Image (cartoon, rainbow, N blue to C red):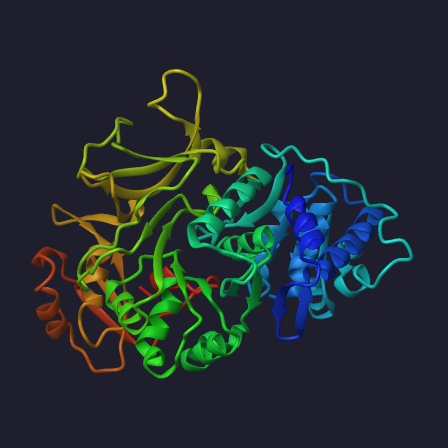
Length: 503
C-alpha cells in the first residue's frame, strides 16, 4: 500500500463487477473505472506527464472526474480538481499558482478557459484520453510512490482572502483517512454513499476513498437537486442511499423544508456533517424524523486531510446548546494553545492546533504561507514536530471533549467587550422564524450586522427582544438584513465574503 492506486487495483480485482460510481449518465463498475483510468494514464504519459507534475481536472462533477483523478495517480502525479463553476479570475489565479502539466477538460470547459490565454497544448480532451488504445498498458508502469512525501492531490481553499492556496495532501493522509472513515461508520461493499460536495471541496475525499477501500458505491447526486430539498430526499430514498456526508447548510435546507416529514428513508443509516457549525435546531429535526440514524459531527480544515476530530451525537441538545466537535481521531493530536504558545487549561479558550500523520505537506508553490501556518510544535522539546495552526478558537472540557468557539478573525472587541460572532448566530437560529443566520462586523460604523434567512417580516427591535433571551445586551446587532436565502459559495457554505461585501 504505497499509494491510493493500490486501493483501486485491489478492489477492482476482488469486486470487478461491483458498481463504483453512478452519475446522471449511468453506472461504472470498479473494473471499468480501473480500465478507463489506466487508458487515460497511458495517454497522459504519452503527452509527457511526469511524476510529481500536477494534473488539473476541469470537468463538471461526474464519473469522468474520478477517472481523471486516478489517471493522474497512475502516472505518479497529483491531481488538482478545479471548481467548474468558479469565475474566470479565480480559475486564472489558481492555474497561475498550480502551473499544471496539463488540464483535462471537455469541449465546454475548453471554451470557458479560452479567455485565460492558455497554451493549446495544455488542454487535453477527456473523451480522447479515454477513447481506448490497442495496448492500454503500453506506457503504464507500476506506481512507485513514497507514501509519506509524494502528493496525492492538491486542493485549493475557498480563498476568502482573494488568493486561493493549494493544499498538498500526501498518499499517507488519504490512506489513513479512508481507513478511519470505513471503520468509524461501518462502510462496506453494500454501502451506498450519496455524494453532495464538489470534487474541488475536500469533503469529497470521504466519499471517494472510503468507497474504493471497501467496494462501496458512490452516487454522484445531480447538483440541481440540492435546490429542491423534497426532490433531493425523494432521490436519496429512490437510490437507497445509506450514508451521507453533507455540509450543514444542506442539512438545514432539508430540515427547514419539511422533507423529512414527507419522505420515508428506511435505508439511510449514517448522517455525517462538517464544514460549518451544525445548528442544533435543525439537527433535532433530523434526529426526531430519523431516530435510528447515527449522527456524526466532524471538524477539520483542508490542511489536515479533511477532518481531525469526531463527535458521534450521543445525547439530546437544546437549540441553544453548543454541539461539540468531539475528540481527536486516530493518529492525530489536538492542542489548544494560548497566545504565548503554552497549553490552555480546561475551559480556557485558545487556538486549536493539530499534529499527527494527517498534516498536509504545505501549500503548493507558496513557501511563505507554508512557513506561517505549518510550524514546529512548541510543546515538544524532544524533537521538531510539525504542527498546523488552524486559526480556529476552541476549548476543552474537563473530560477532554472539545468545543468549537469560532475563527480568531471573527472574534471582535466592541465597546470594551470581546464578542464571538458565532454566539450571535447560534442565538439567532433559536428564533422560530429564522432558518439561518450570519453575523458580520461593520468596522467602519462599529456595529454588528446580522443577516438572517426568513420568510416573515422581522424588525430589529423585535429580533433583539428575542435574542436577549440568549445573549447579553452588548452582543445585540445594530443592523438587521432579512433575506429569502443567504448566499452560498461553491461548497454550499454560507458565503461570508459576499455578505461582508454588502456592508
